Amino acid sequence: MTRIVCVGITVLDRIWYLDDLPKEGGKYVAKDYTEVGGGPAATAAVAAAKLGAEVDFIGRVGDDDTGARLLTELESLGVNTRYTRIVKGARSSQSAVLVDADGERVIANYPSPDLPAAADWLHEIDFSQWDIVLADVRWHEGARQAFTLARQQGVPTLLDADVTPQDIAELIAISDHAAFSAPGLRRLTQLNDAEEALKKAQTLTNGHVYVTQGRDGCFWLENGAVCHQPGFEVKVVDTTGAGDVFHGALAVSLGQKGTPLEAVRFASAVAALKCTKSGGRAGIPDCDQTRSFLSLFV
Image 1 (tube, rainbow, N blue to C red):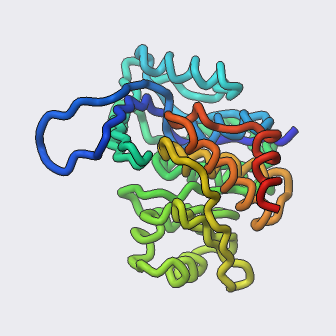
Image 2: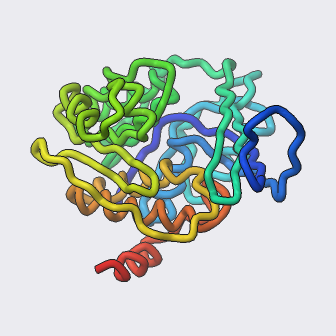
């Protein structure tokens, strides 16, 4: 069984479903509402577990009701939280998510200032037990520490390179695989052209670089050449968590020694299927569902 650890944040997503995303101030009535655990690394962990991997999540939560709820949900979905730190007297992180009729969304995240950024305690953990280490950029110190320890043990690393206020160049440098969101790549490189931006990002690392472009699929570099996996056509209900799910599936395939082409195709299919249901986690398929879906595109 593939063994994966996901390092980063977990948050409670409060999701409102509207006909259209607000374009000005005012009052709006939601068609539906739900609450579910979110966060890049945490949702990637859920995806990897659904796909059959043995998964640990390393992060921080407060000792409030929200933190307890987040950990209980992760455990119920097959993710081990034995290494997650519960911070006494701290609030856990939350997000407000607005989703329109086409499945597009706006997210306002509140990263709890009560959760200490320090990650020196990760030294207590044996990273050699995993086949691959995935980290998001929302807990910068955690990602840096985890990747440093993983590389010392010869364990591959995968960075979910999304938008964050901090400069993530040092994280990219120690990543074997850096998978960017389109906004994350633009922020890093200050370039709009995906090909040129990927080539600029490649100068920061000896590893592989990728960028997801929603419906347009995923682009990555192989020996300096740009490769492309088109997006799979599905009826989109909700794109919340699609990128996180992509990263979790990518980690599973790479942890199984898949090539970048194999890993991207697999992850793209998993993310597409996730978008067919509401919420960031409800639509995540298992391996059998994913293989059945991919067989339609042979």
